[in-house]
Every structure is written in C-alpha cells, then in structure tokens.
Image (tube, rainbow, N blue to C red):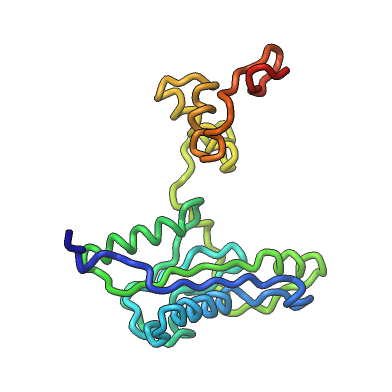
Length: 220
C-alpha cells in the first residue's frame, strides 16, 4: 500500500534536564534559553541543523515560570527563523499533545511542511530564588499582566462546587464514563487493570467483607 507523501513524521527530538548539582545556586536558565537549546538539539538530531531557518510553524507551550511579551517571536529571533505561523498555547493537561496532533493534521492538509513544538520550565529554580528572597533576571516581560489562558473556561457547575483541580475533575469524568457504560465498580476496576500486561497473570480480585480494597480469592 503506497504511503501518502504528506504523511507527518517526527524528524528530530531534543531534551535536556538542568539538575541542581550541575547548575548550583544560579539555577537553570530562563525558559527562553531552554527552548532555544532543546530546539537546536532537535535540529542536530535530524542531521540537518539548518532546518530551523526553514520553519513554517513555531509553537511554544505556555510557560508557568515566566511570561514573555511575545514568546514565539523571541524564540524565532534567537533561532534565526522566520516562520509564517507562530503560536503561544493556552494551558491544559494535554496541551503539548494537542499541539503535536494539530500540527500533524495541518501537515497532512498541505498547510505546513516543517514545524517546531517546544516547551520548558524552570519552576524549581524559581522556587529557590523565592526562598532566598531574590528574583531571577529574566528578560522580555510584558508591559501588562495577562489573564491565565485556560484552554477551556470552567463550567458554572464546576465553579459552584469548586471541582477545579485535575485530581477532582478526572475522577468525575471517570465515574461519568463508568455510569455511561453501566459497569459496576469492581468490574470497571478489573477492566482498567487489564491494561497492564503484568496484571493479566494475577487472579481476578473480589471484594472482602468489611473492606473497600479488592483481594485475591482465598486471601483475608
């Protein structure tokens, strides 16, 4: 079966972790420097570092560490790139993956040929500075404070019941899914457990009297 010539593919990846023993009290660099370094590592990984100058799209995952005035423009300048499409994301639990899949779809449609998706945080460094009563010398701050860019606003019901953190919302979603499937709690847990190859070798659990935890048959 022939492969579509516009089938998206990853041509290079880059990653780095700045560890305390390596950076000392100065901490990790600011996010803009992080983004540039991992972008260049990804370009090196392709075997063609000059690809960065040919970017059609440059997309930056929202940074909790520091707010820049124009993150994609600052990174493009640092890389010597001039992409026609630039995007700074909102914030959400699946944001990086959404950027990757949307980019792949755009490539498949013929809208893009080469894209960079990048992100990085220096939160541990930021906390260390705060404990010392200091502020890191980050650059390019916006002139005005901006609102937190949630990808989707909270529903009024979520606000009314203060169901806001992920560890609450995900539990609600999962219970709603179980109810939609009409599956009992024990059966649902068992089906989820089957996702693990190792769990397939374990005996099917049953609930013991007086306990909320499942136990293997014959156990107490």
